[in-house]
Every structure is written in C-alpha cells, then in structure tokens.
Amino acid sequence: MTNAATSHVVHARAPGKINVFLKVGAVLEDGYHEVATAYQAVSLSEDVRAYPADDFSCEFTGSIDTSGLATDGSNLAIRAARALARRSGYRGGVRLLLEKNVPIAGGMGGGSADAAATLLACDALWGTEATREELLAIAATLGADVPFAFTGGTAVGTGRGDQLSPALAKGQFHWVLALADFGMSTPGVYQELDRHRERHAQDIFPAQAQPTVDANVLQALRAGDARMLAESLHNDLQAPALHLAPGLGKVIELGEENGALAGIVSGSGPTVAFLVADADSALELQVALSASRLHVVRATGPVHGARLVHD
Image (cartoon, rainbow, N blue to C red; front, top):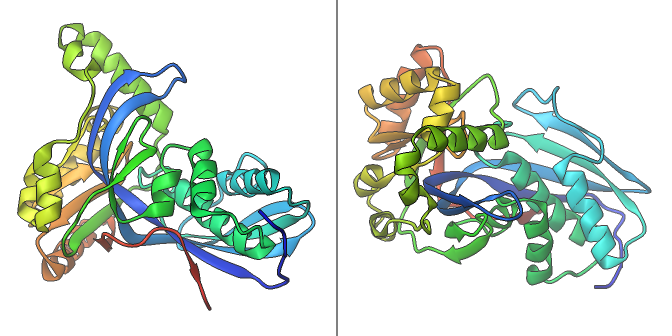
C-alpha cells in the first residue's frame, strides 16, 4: 500500500441487508455461532463522508435517531478507519460524517455498512491503494456482516457469515420494511436462542448439525421468483426475537393480512421485512401499515455493495 492523501472529502455508500435465510449451528471456539445464510443487499443505505484530519472522530446525520450511538473508538466506523491506518502505515486520521438511514440495532447491518463504506472512503482519501482482497480481509476482522456490506448483491455466507459465495439473483425483489422504535442486541438474541435450545434439548441435534442454505432459496433467487422465495424464507433467530419482543408477531400477521407474500424478522431483529410481488403491492402495503401507525419504508434488492459516490 502507498500513501498519497487527498485534501478533498470522499463520499462512499454501502447497503443494508436482509437475511432471506438464516440457519444457526453450533457455537464456535471464538464464541460466534456457525451459520448458513443467504444475504440480499437492499436499497436502504448508509452514506459516509471522510474528511482529512489529524485524529479520528465521527458524527451523525440522517433520517433516524442517533443519540444513543457511540462516537468514540468503540464505533465500528472508527475501528474500520484505524484498522486501515494500521494496515497501511498511514499516520494521519479522519473525520467521518455518517448519514444513517438503516435502522440502528435493527438486524439490517447498518453498522457493518458504515464500516464497509468507511474502509472504501478512507482508502481513497488517504491514497493507500489497498486491493479489494486487502479491504475484505480487514472487513472480516470487524464483524461477520462487514464483508457482505462491502461486496453487496446476493450471497451465501457460511462460517460466522463472513465466508461469502456469490449467489445468482435474477431481476428485482420488492420489500416493505417495518422499522421498530427500539433496537435489539444481536448477542442477546443469540443467547436467547441458546436458552431456547437448552429448554428443548431433545431437539438440539438438528440445530448442531452443519447448517446449510436450502436449495429452494437459491432456486427462487436464480429464478427471480418472489412467490417461491416467500415460501422459503427462514430465520432461526426469529423465534428468540419474538420471545424477547412478542409484539413483532403481530406486525408479521398484520403485514401478511394486508397482501405481503411473507414476513420475516431481519437478522436478529427487530426490523420485519415483508416480501411483496411487485412495486404496486409494496406501495399498497406501505399505506396499509402506515395507517396502523407503523414506521415503514420500501426497498428493493439486490443492489451493489460499498462504492464511491461522486457528488
């Protein structure tokens, strides 16, 4: 890597994600669970603007409440910038302006998208000229979802979810996202899953087996068939999320009663993702759920991963 820092602001964007399929296996030695998931990047994205600075800092803007987010070294975007600086030998810093649009602690990988966009923005700002493989290697050290936010599209994730294989997806899928006014802790939801499995120990063996993504999911994505995909949506974290936040079950019922092909808790929740047939159906469902005082947005997928934006 070389250093030829620019004095200009660099703007990068990375997408949120929906886990259209998620199977959770055994706990690995590092404390993470082994998973098999099918990710789809969607058109709800995070924007990061990187400014030259002597030290590392971040601030927020955007459409959602960010008052509870850390701005110190624990913030994932700052961790990403510091990791690239260490890897490249860059001695300066960066001021990050993060425009938040993906729900916070919502199961859609917003923090991971921040980290992925930050890696790309800082690489361009600092002139470190990291290869894609080098940036992906750094991404994998930051969290299980960060590599996918970097690559985008549709992919199968195994291991912790960070070992990615591209999956073919035809056409466009339409989603309506019901956003909660609270967040959920990903480790907390996994712990609830573990407790659930301990309570039902006689059923534990299938969960501990090597998790795989069902062939029907991949076939539906390849065919661009929303109805087939709706029948195959699955999330092992949905039951523990519903146990911790029972109201999410009523949200799923309401969406399916109003025309959704299917609803699913996204990742560890609490965002509920509704798959619909087309753009008209998405608008109709958005109107219906809004009338029930839910905060809903429409999104499509798949979309590109982290990329530079030229303002």
